[in-house]
Length: 164
Image 1 (cartoon, helix red, strand yellow):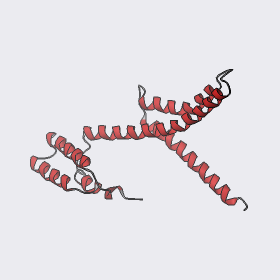
Image 2: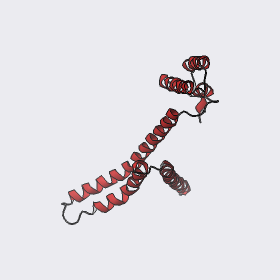
Image 3: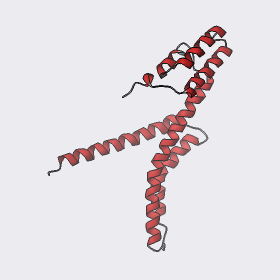
Image 4: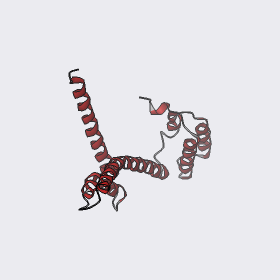
């Protein structure tokens, strides 16, 4: 696996660090000379490690905290959508079967929809509801991922053990 500190950075990353350094200068943590020196080094930086070295002795600024929280929420939102995608496709197939069979009787795909999309709705409520809890959403998604990986490993092991 690649070391995150050795990854190359984009101009947007350099600009974000320059803005963060500007906030630290305005708060009095950096002198104007230190600010200029660090901004110059930030624009010359090529890797994540170079940028991180310029702020090791500084606390996280409020803007950096907000940016980090926004990135985390965006990542969790993408994972929730991926989880919901599987349930939505199964639900769509069931609705298609129900419609192809004449669409008469009770709407039985409603049960499939409820059971397949309930975890995604619960996660969305936890992430976007009145009291957001990113840790709970992330822990739930990680447990689901771990169960899925364990299931795939068991299937692969059974497949290898089958006589040929």
